[in-house]
Length: 144
Image 1 (cartoon, rainbow, N blue to C red):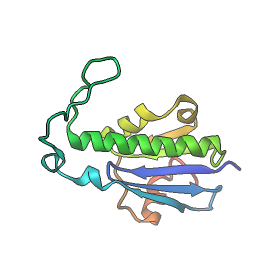
Image 2: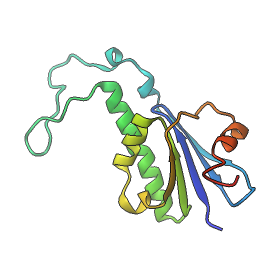
Image 3: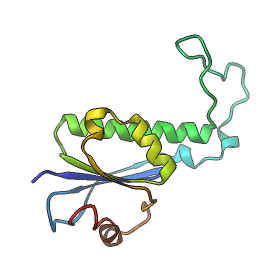
Image 4: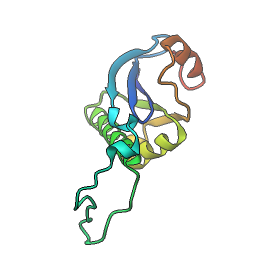
């Protein structure tokens, strides 16, 4: 039976669970925190000269709010976690659970072969849900 990874995340917290087969429940594999995403934009802005970075092509990068940039960086980190898990054959199927805006960031950063292993996407923030509640809410996606 293939292992299923279940990522339950928002812009500042991610919990990675594994399911080892039907009726085996959830096992917390890793918890990742990104406190920068909780800060206010005003706390993350610098007024020092040279804060705008140019892109390799010579133009300037699009301006994202600092909080959005922090969330984007966390989404990249999570996508890398899945990439490494896939290349080490640690899972054969994945389920992503995240609020819509953050789900879009994760999807945009995930490579094609890893993305093909995602069998379900749930656009909700269940990061604060207890494991029994989470299992109940994901019952349509997987037999826990």
